[in-house]
Image 1 (cartoon, helix red, strand yellow):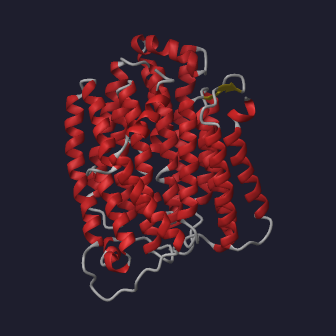
Image 2 (cartoon, rainbow, N blue to C red):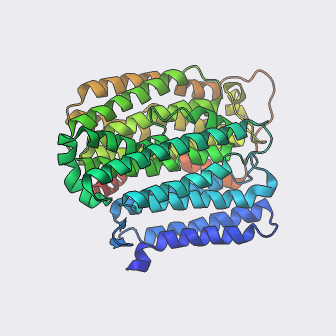
Length: 472
């Protein structure tokens, strides 16, 4: 049972090991990408084989359950899509291609560890494994001045600050509860939070690291500069997979704190509203597409928090569903950015003009992804928002839902602006974008996944509900 339960991690460790040995030689980019995709596909199969595994490993600090396995599947699937999206690694220095893929795999491995970690120090170590790999790869950008160095420094500084605050909060929790295991904290924290104001502060401090990964207010300041400074391939990873891990840990921590903790609920509600409002209003004035998606991600983090703070099965399963949809929609946008910018440069609204003539598939992918993030039916984004808002109404958070709906209406403006730019007439004649077969296949996948899951969400919603049931 141990081998089956730990099979996805072992497969991804093998991927990292093979890529490490490949760094010792000289391989063409096509060979590196092919090996990375093949090894990640093997990891995907291994994860699928262990989907029903149930076990507790490493002195009960590592829990394999339905929730962890679902998120591992999403993380490995997301890594595969990132590798496939950045097939030529045009934004990364040629001599660093193998090292780049290796560090992305290490970061994904840290997120997989995070999915099953149910002990505070194990959670911290898993977070640091994921973060340190990203600290290394963010400056791996070809050309574009020194903007990538600034992005790397900002990511490191904010990461160090969030880690320090998280450790401080963990020390408070240990001092109050005398344990670092989440299952024991789940029995002690509801009463402690109700009677000890320090316990609420401790929980917020511990969640700081997850706010940082999710780009939630007030740990969001790094997001636009890092998105803009990092390469398009790196940003597609940073914008999606760490957020998946952060959502899982926030779900586990809110479940630990208890279902009817008014103080913590109101703090999270305020954070959600500030994230949505700040992200959407600032995104309205952006011209750089990656900066726009950065502020958009801050707003989406606020939407996800609405589901998490309900602390019930409906809201949390909606949060799980939404973050999976967000991964697909966001990667769809970055797929377009990567193919519009052949040399890895940043993309503005002007660069999107005439895209429908240069590449109808890219324009349609951007249109569907933008409609999804705006919450327009029948996309996955619409049903995700609908489920989140329904869960919040079910708990009586009417004011929160009203503010979220207003924010969604504001966000629709800049998402539709993206789509409109793609279908605008160009200022001058532009070259047609020739896409290889794999890129065409990937674009078609994003379009179909966003629409089909949105139109028929029952299967994914049932899977998310089954995964969350383990916490209730």
